[in-house]
Length: 189
Image (cartoon, rainbow, N blue to C red):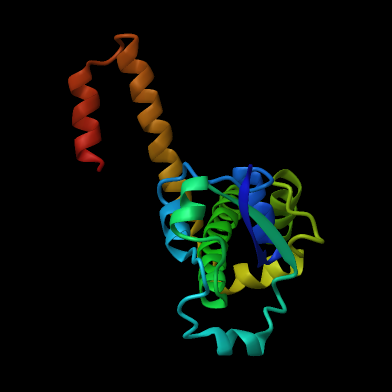
């Protein structure tokens, strides 16, 4: 018998969960996410401190539902439902992860000279977030508000990573000594 909980969420949050943890979503072995999720489970709805605030919103942006697996033990020990406050909190956590993922991919593309529009298209196409799941206009607005990248900083970091990889190869085949490699790494930390 499989135990699960279905919660409302935004389409791109559902897609992120399913891409990372399958369908139904199974992150029971995820040490950073599942314990917090488990703590939100209730046998009977517990704290409803902010539920009235969320009822006014009617969770109108949460147009999809994600089925999330729960271990048998957690089902009986902790519960099988979540109140609105905990659903919104869980969604915020996953949305933050989803947006961080999106920012990293898009900023990486922009660092190599790709326009914001083309970077968004690349993200949507290559990471399976089509227009109906996460509209490009929404991503664009979010990036304009929150994505602050310095092309020079990113290129500098890429250059440092290339140097490190090169030194590993050169020290591995004996062209340079381990001491030279360590001195470089210490000086450039």
